[in-house]
Length: 309
Image (cartoon, rainbow, N blue to C red; front, side):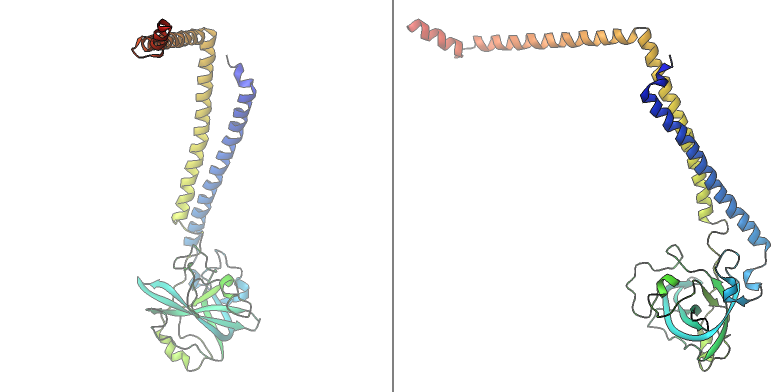
């Protein structure tokens, strides 16, 4: 009864099932592993001291930024150069903007430094001047932003001197020097040493807290991984269910064929079709007969013409 499973058609179906189920299980297991990694990272982060309380290190020793170095205090020395305003950033549910300055270091690269936050809109709020001369700053290290970062402006079209995303990829197109693939946020807005007259005015700036590194903690993405895990396992079960359903239907059809139930049904269908065709033929013949007997028809005219001759 199940010999149909060896037919070419069913070889294709069986091959699809054999490949689809392990693939779904693999993807579900991978998503589950991603969720477990986030849980472990969250537990490890809670056991470690806060990144801001750990000793500061030179910027070069903390790069590249990862889940361990993100938020760590970084030290850099150089001179402030270009300044950019980063609009659309909130602090304590208030709308404002970041004040970002490029710190050109002795290495030739520049480090983006967020000196602080100001309420209002760029161009309508006075911005304290950056310290002059050589300065040494200590700020919490942050990874370059991306399109998924909160507050990032991806629409573009900002006026000159404004920046939608704090990232090396965005800044290299605006400044004529290399940029570190990271940035720091100052927690002491007046803590730059070696500065000049701008230090006093810098007190108007509010410090921007360091954000938690992406990919850590039990955030929405972690539970999305858990949801995807369930979806992949459901897909595997659905494929197996549909395969059993198709096999059962094919086996029932084969059994009906052996018992002759399929032939009888076909015979009855053919008889009904012949009866319908016969009825349609009789109806057509009756219609033609009625049309021939009707007055003024072509047959009557022929008869009259014959009689006259």
